[in-house]
Image (cartoon, rainbow, N blue to C red; front, side, top):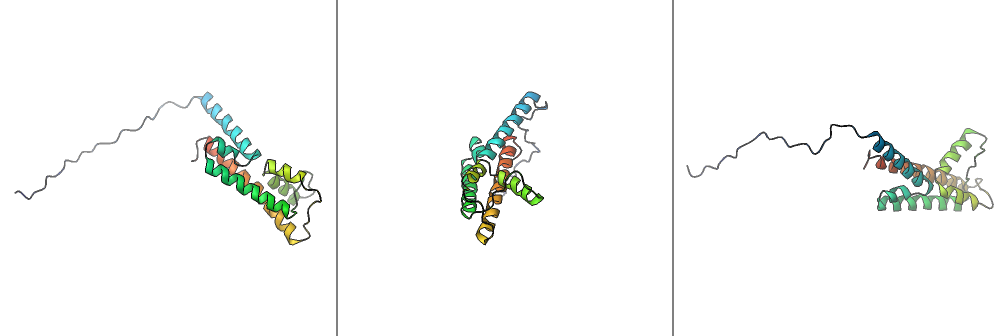
Length: 154
């Protein structure tokens, strides 16, 4: 019959695995990678976006730096409370940790706070929240840079 279409042969070929080593990663390389990841995380905390810049993730670096800088500028401009180390209650201590998360921006905002916070008005109260948000956002970005450096995340 001339109308018959030839049937292709099917094979049960299994693709070969790509260069998977059965040997464990050398301990020295793992320690070096972990030390580099900690360095990148510290750099990402100190200057928002620097960890992603070191990993050549330029877009994320720019977004992290811009977002944290904008939140700190707005929060300090609204005369939000920048918590100090010697907080008297749990809220003040948590606020200090959150504010300190902004890295170098915390120290700049603390140095540029000449008249102190004004939390008696709504602007100051919202400014306090913006400063804490900047710190938490920067800590999350530093954690992401750490995970990427350890090759756990893309």
